[in-house]
Length: 254
Length: 240
Image (cartoon, rainbow over all chains, first blue to last red; front, side):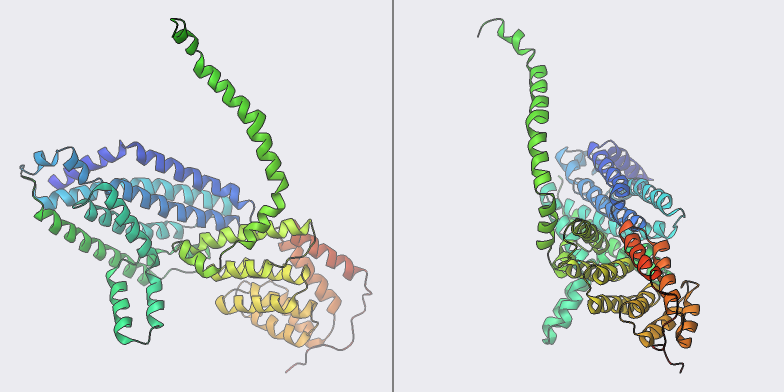
């Protein structure tokens, strides 16, 4: 119950934040503008509306996750409200998980709005609905859950500015980490090769959540692939939350 | 400062607003328009020249490869458009299309349209064929690629044996056009080449999503219609 109360409170606080509406308005504008841009593409309207829509959903979802996530804990410390919460019968892990769930709820609503707009625009341009688009957005949402957990992790021990820098860095590395495996194969040195592989496995591979291009090309989605990817994302999120809890437990708020 | 100064300053926001509007309409817009018109063609050319290689774009696009491919495709369309109304030469078309398909190997229309313009505007048939064959290797389930390879062998190179080989591959892929088996039959019989060519061009015109492609097809149909209807002798594929 406590976790649910904290989550609900975090959600209410987030939806009052003007930055959320600014990002959402900009995202919806860009998704809507994709129809105009698509008109210049010689028969590729459907493809461009879907590609641009999916990319906007991911990108602006990430912005929301970062901008709201980095202040989740630091704002409580800055306002000194944490000193009122900690003495109450609320465990620190419960507090962090509640905060995280509140932000994920906010993301569900905002990504949901963007996703529905992409889905409807694609149906309007194509003349047929593409339910697989919603699956692609759903899988990508798991990647956003990882980014949110990263932002929360940094928020437990760092300032908002540094947390933003670190989270953006992890996002960029995560989007490109798949290329590390290609680099690893180019080195004959076994130790170096293994070191690159270990780095790749330790970092989040955010690129593997991109099922959108398969959907846009009309290629089939393998349920096993989707399941494995979602399971990987959820497991990585758990790992990050446990790390955040471990750090947060050690912080002194007396 | 006199006591009247604050009252005079009270009009300042309106005055500043009116002045801002006057500067925008009277100076900024004319200057901007002049520059935009003067550099309209150069702007596309400059963007084409400065386009980074696909490898760099893959990294810079942070994994949003499909969106990066779409952006380069829009630039390609602008490039084709600006040269179609100009010199009708496309020296950078190959690089542009290869960048698009390097970023997204499943962008089938980039292979087909790119090859079409390489063929009919640049007369670079072998490059067009290489592009289409690369597309077929990346997308073995799409009939459009073997179909266009067959069409190129048939119409451009008059290599009917190769055309038959590729039409046969297209015939085995679901969704292929209804006329493909008829063409295969005609190729085996080594007859009706003018009708086949006409039908191929008409199919391209009917499926065209742009006036550019439609114009190419119309031009070729008109050329064929001026030719005598008698089928050419020989040159057909040999039935195995």
